[in-house]
Length: 109
View 1: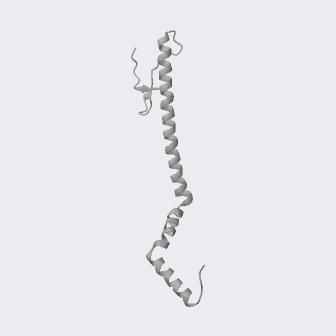
View 2 (view 1 turned 180 degrees about the horizontal axis):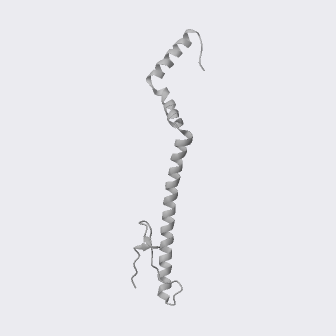
View 3 (view 1 turned 60 degrees about the vertical axis):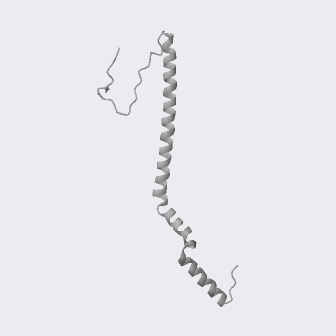
């Protein structure tokens, strides 16, 4: 018997809803028991994959949110600060400081 599954509870079926028509579990036809078991196993695997994919997306979202909301520009500022010793101006200031230290007789450790 073919039924129309285009409606769900009197409305259009949501586009991302998966509806499986499985044989009756309590059927007395043994082949239905096997079919039902296979469908149940496939559904369990699908659910596990969807759940793990959702968990990864949620963790990525949370990491991004924490970075934006709690840390703000801190990571950018730290990155810029870490690059300071490599810039040309810092090198010039460092050379000048060493030159002044040697003029006044200050020995750096």
